[in-house]
Amino acid sequence: DNPKVTINSQLSCRVDFKPDTLYLVSFYIKTDLAPKAFVAPNLWVGKNIFIPSKMLRGVSPWQQITMEVKTPAKLPKHCFFRASLWGKGSYNIDHIVIKELK
Image (cartoon, one colour):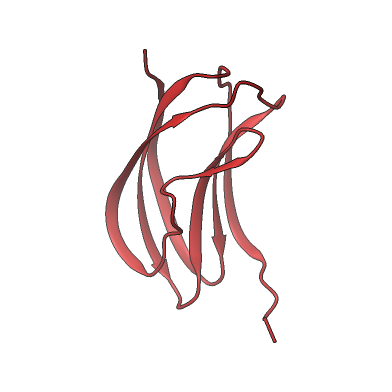
């Protein structure tokens, strides 16, 4: 029997991406999460691209997450950087940078 899971907190920032373009995504995050809880930072570009590719769990001090991401050739009207907390706990996120790479 699985418990009902709800999003307790979500950060969402609209981003104007270009199609078929390489970006550097970087941010700092610290977590204080209950067992089984996780944070899922991601880009919404018509599909979810998780950054990092695994969910963040447990308690961690400030850490920098950096990843190169290529957007698809076809993008939806609105794209987002998001971070969602699933379960109990808290997270802090700071200094989000999304930079086009040439």
